[in-house]
Image (tube, rainbow, N blue to C red; front, side):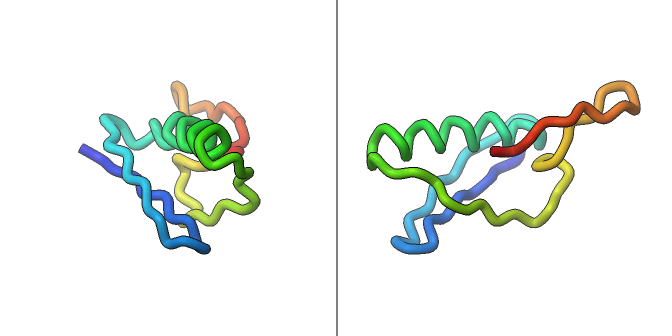
Length: 70
């Protein structure tokens, strides 16, 4: 129902993750981070986003749970 894309600015390589819920973006990023670190032996230095709420917090019964995206 949803998707998220990650693009490497240097190589322009893209990763696309299909999501059932919009709030699965953090889990997708964690999976991508692990893949990049293991496969390419590199660290992610910077993350750009559209500042959507799925990147900054999850809501549970009208209360926001705080967590960091990275």
